[in-house]
Image (tube, rainbow, N blue to C red):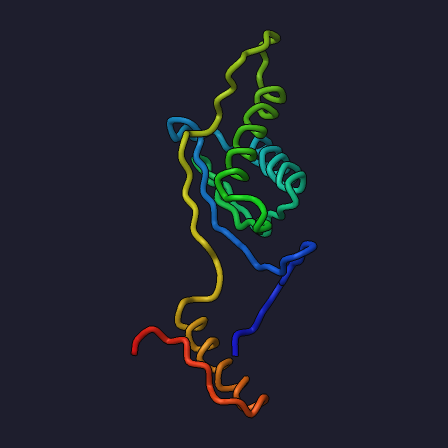
Length: 151
């Protein structure tokens, strides 16, 4: 049986949507050192909370940031990543830039990103569905409803 962990809920959904995301600074520059690394990590956590997301783990070598984030199903991954990258670039510029003039375009991050879903593997889900059918038949005493498409 599939073990459900860390389920979260909204008004009409129960979910466990976690993603591994990697973002890199523009031109893959090695700029994430010391205090900059800590402050950008703090910024990302604050911004994630604003969108009801939670950064569960994170790491920052000098040339990229990778983190594990839980995102509610009402938001797309692209929307959240765009929000995090855009707002953190503005905040980082305002925090670290020594120039007093306002610059319209504040680019810190490269355009793309990497994302991978994190969760139960396909075999585990298949076994759970197959075993759940048998368990339901045993409990209800009804004949098995077979929804396999391999017939």
